[in-house]
Length: 68
Image 1 (tube, rainbow, N blue to C red):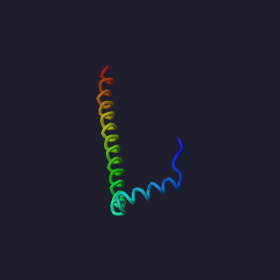
Image 2: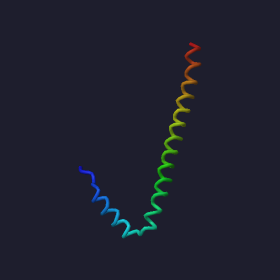
Image 3: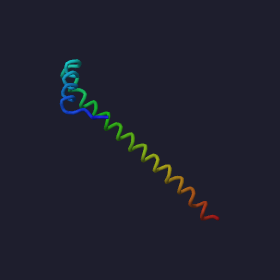
Image 4: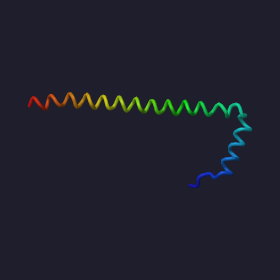
């Protein structure tokens, strides 16, 4: 599969500006930035929760091993 080149991207951008207008296209940047930062925050929170669960499980397993 071939990636679009420079001219193809320019044509798509012109079509998007014609359809949505410059104002709507300008609003896409900040909205996309917020979406990406929200996604990164969610992934980080999930990783921290997973690490906490693994840590709790290993702490519970260690005393059981010492008793035997």
